[in-house]
Image (tube, rainbow, N blue to C red; front, top):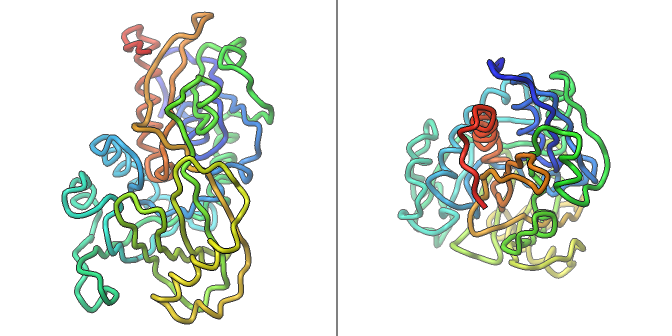
Length: 336
């Protein structure tokens, strides 16, 4: 899509899925975009993510569902080219909504997912009273991040590997800054409400499991999920608030495999390929807002997506695009 407004020099801080998706949207709208990221894409939290498109540990619910529906549409289209984009459509079972029960604020999500239905008793594990069956995008995140970088480059954008010490520094030679720094926003903004939710997972050789499976209760520290990816079967997981360690815990890994093996006994003998830990950038609510930095440059904040980054990335990128146009028209709200 081509913008009818003036092209801007934009600096996007953060090279994870939120930053790259925002950058692609802006570059394809005609802006001159440079992503500033300390880490390569495969070194970001996004690269560790399981990649299932489903709202998880993200608020506010109503807006998160709108963003998720938009991302579902985009990822479903990208799934027509899985080898290029890393996105595939995969059927699976959600045995419990991620935030508990039928009144979880996700009703609009259930209505929007094509073909989603209640699981039958035969499709649910023993002891589980309810769940959902759906065919949703499942994203190979390292491959998808590479695709986004290539798409950005094709649109005239670029990625620069360097650490950003302040948003003012990022905006020194730019017309506008988009802050997609994730957990880094805690210090960079600074925003003390940003905190990690540690997630540990185990990648094993896939014994032939073709569907995804998730069981995650409201606010649960330990969850159970299986996500078949091209590089192996991803087993999870954990969701530990304010835990900062990125080192895999052998005892936690053993417990993850044991939980998954209760559902699929063959996993008890599966060869382990990798252990991974990621820190979800959580916040009481996603921050999508505009403020002016001390030098007067507008800064669009887009962070705090918790465990829902890939699920909401394209919806949030649309919001960023609208906010940029509003700033250009000098009618965007400035909030601090």
